[in-house]
Image (cartoon, rainbow, N blue to C red; front, side, top):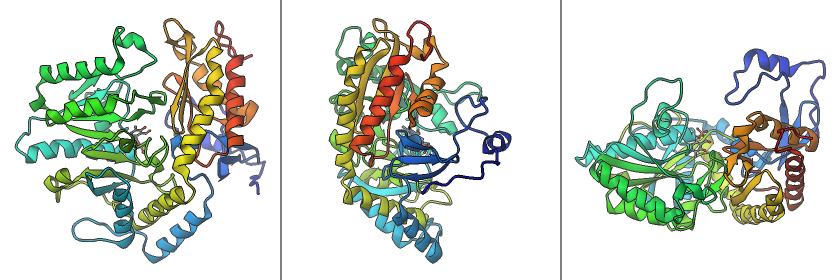
Length: 448
Ligand SMILES: Cc1ncc(COP(=O)(O)O)c(C=O)c1O
């Protein structure tokens, strides 16, 4: 069933008048006005269908149009939609949801702190790691280690973790930037093994700053916004071992990677990590409700027992009910395995694009796929440094010509569809991306 809206209504013009869009150049009067979704298919207001290889910022794990989730939301909303869990107030959907989250998590995870988004959860984590050291008599432990180019949310705390953001004034100068382990960019490591280089840099940084001044390291286990970049398998285990030996907490930002996006419930499990905090959002409810959470290690949870924060919507009954049902669907339909299989299919089918002059790297983990574009394979300079307009034009061309929705993140075309995407749809997306990238003229930046 297509929903074609009244063709006399100019939704694009009405949008341009009142909706303030985050990110991107929307001076172009056209808009993609989406009205309906089912599985990995989306329909616009003119009735045209698209394959969704984006998943609304990498999060619609169980696909669009799940009537089961709508029913559960309606039932819970008409029973009791929300009451705070501050103090001694509790509710059953939230208890059950937290039990499900913990049951699948690394064994040291004991408690869940519920939030409404990834940014809010990252910000809360930033406050909690400092509070933890404060309560243990080390209030000077305030510095935070982060990977250059990583993303930990859009709040002022997120800006602090990014080392500042242009135009928003000063933020506390607490972040210490470390070299990200981007295997493709071997120029970063002076011929050394990326993990060896990064571990040495970490040890030298701790020696220089003093472990007693460092609260935590925040890390994305696969770098998402930087361009869907998996890190070497030995990277996080070796980094975390060094952090732990210095009493520095480790916060695994799994906002993107968890709930099957990178192929497992939590990527921490793949690497045998026991983070002190795991930050969650996005796939936690497949976008059916805005939801985020922190998983807390048992010791940390004890020290922070009763700490403030939380927020009005923490423990929202309807959100918790949807969160549990989302986990049930992922399990029932084997979507963790589907993510791994479809991800491998993407890498197989996209592999030969490496022969195109503009393709420098094809990589991925689960359904976080990145095709990095370069203007020079020898220097690995980003194609978008040379032709910034292609950031907009490549996804637009792919959408208009092939009906496939993709995005650009960092220097890469990012493919992050719902985990329910079919093998046939994967092939269509791979063919579309291959066709468009083959049309890009490396000298002029024109798409012919
Ligand atoms: C790694 C990471 N952390 C945190 C966030 C922020 O999450 P949210 O958009 O739910 O605020 C994002 C968003 O893209 C992210 O990629």
